[in-house]
Image (cartoon, rainbow, N blue to C red; front, side, top):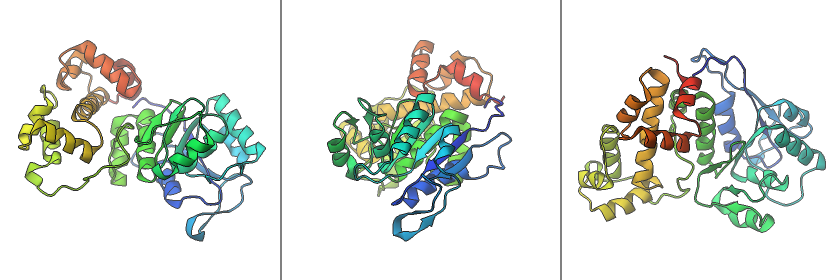
Length: 321
């Protein structure tokens, strides 16, 4: 990654009824010390309206570091969860959220945290997601919001909304990838014993997360494909390796992974390209070839679409070679 001595500040905003798991995700990703890195990690704090102790699930009490004024001076505000009943927010809180948004502060909501952003008017006309059990209530309270009930997270640049529980890990890791690159995100994920990258469009539900026959499973096809990222792989090729018809493989893959094989292959190729951009000085044409793209133009377009950055800009920001 680029040598950046600036310490990005993150604040988790909490209230009574706080979800401990969701707060734990934010704390684990942004709040732990990272002695393995020789660059500044996030500066993390927990905030409540008055700086008072809040009562979380199961009656556990959490004492924040700061009161609401802290939100005037942070780069990212995480809302780990929020009460779903209407009209509980003070004008001071809503004004602070709106002012932060206007200033360019980044927001990340986990699970029901999206309700606060919606009440502040930051989501009108936007596509968002939340935990499946909150979808109907959110739509009733905010009919101008477009709800994608399938996605695990949705990224609008300075507003990221994620679904419930473990989807919050994916959204937080997505931010780490944006801020520090794929290599660092992978190291953080390894410490968390978590998946380094699940794309936001993957579904909240998968029907068959555990498979029974190791040699003839979707996982076996994925492992085979990962080892051959440079080669032109088709869905039919993957299906044949696990002795399935293409139709059956497509259905099983989507049930197991939550996206199509083509979408997954695209993400895998881009992930390989990110690794090469971060760790080598190879030219873009060589990297495109190793990632399985026959055309440099196709690679450039796919990389920008997936990461939001051009390949050249990504290298400038994250290369350590």
